[in-house]
Amino acid sequence: MIEVKDIHKGFNGEQILKGITTTFERGKTNLIIGTSGSGKTVFLKCMLGLFTPEKGSICYDGATYSDLSTEEQRDLREQMGMVFQGSALFDSMTVEENVMFPLMMFTKQKKEEMLVRVNEVLARVNLENSNNKLPSEISGGMQKRVAIARAIVTRPKYLFCDEPNSGLDPRTAIVIDNLIKEITEEYDITTIINTHDMNSVMEIGEKIVFLKFGNLEWEGDKSQIFKTDNEAVTEFVYSSNLFKKVRDAQLKGL
Amino acid sequence: MFYLDDIGRYFLMLKKVFSRMTKGSVLRSLIFKEIDDLIIGSLGITVFLAFFIGAVIAIQTALNLTNPLIPKQLIGFASRQSMILEFAPTFLSVIMAGKVGSFITSSIGTMRVTEQIDALEVMGINSLNYLVFPKIVAMFMYPFVIAIAMFVGVFGAYIAGVYGGFVSGSEFLTGLREEFIPYHLTYAFIKTFIFAFLLATIPSFHGYYMTGGALGVGKASTSAFVWTTVVIVTSNYILTQLLLS
Image (cartoon, rainbow over the protein chains, first blue to last red):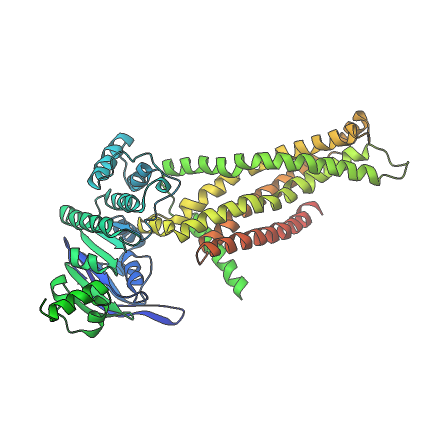
């Protein structure tokens, strides 16, 4: 579980996060949604320890990040997996080497043992027979799956995903969403996904946090998001033509 | 003030490069890869340039020897001194600032743009040590490149001087051996070691702290070349003053 208390973060005098307090539960897919520039990525990077908040605290299963020593912070980071928006695969390494990388860095396993684990996670993300391909030789959806495999290979306690669906076709996007949800339940980890894709919200949103101009505007689950009378949330949800048409049809009783 | 800020950040970067070392086995393979990219990959162009620079030095010296009282063996002497003291260590380092420097900046800069550096940091890896330290170690092989360049440069001077009909082979070789001061080699290699360090770290600094997208990578590569050259030329002056005068 991750507890965020009154997080503030700004750059060059401009306040990006203006006091966010919320909780992300273990074993659930937690979604951070909001329009571009609402502070989603900064919020995510604060939780990852890439940005240091100016005020407030972030607790990971009771351990406050800012109270930990550098060594303890590093140990905590080893328990985090991250799927970046652009996958962030190391382009000079093959798929196998990319997935094996965290194991090489943090375990004392023999290469054979590492290979067993790598093949196991690659099979889990349905990517057999791609071990020796370079990231540039596989599709965007496959790159996302390699990124997920790399993120979970060390069995992390926390999984962060920054817009995992961006640049993917709707069908592949659903596959990736479901994969993340299944992995969250299977590994019993705290998953936080940064997205502005309403399909993801509908598909896997067990807890949804809506940010607007660096403030937490609303939080709830996917069943509540369509019933809320919060104007900002409604505007965001129904900015999609499809959802707007469905709502109009519902209002007309069709 | 802007430059002072950058200088401060450069030294803070160096401190981070040498802290929280990456796992030895990983580091070893990274160092071999960097030696291949930065050193072995630079040998061809270095040898090519050194040969022709040496040849031009010999021809220029020969053409300027209009006084019959000055012995022709000066061509060998001048070629040796020019190659060892300046052309191999300094001139080639400036060229390497373009070749090796832009390679380092663009590769690290692209990793920054594509969030690969963030990926390393999230994993709890000291990205500066992982990316820059192997380059520094690999660049300690750079003096070997310069040693080869010195030899090839003098060889180029011999070929151009002798086969161009400017000097006889024996005169050239006599000049080559004349008043040889071994300390000049020490001076040249001290310079080369320092330039190697600058060649590894200044472009890394520009790549690591670049901002923006693809355009930012291009700008960072350009400023890395400019600043590496400026620092090499300036430190060349200071080192010459300290070591030779």
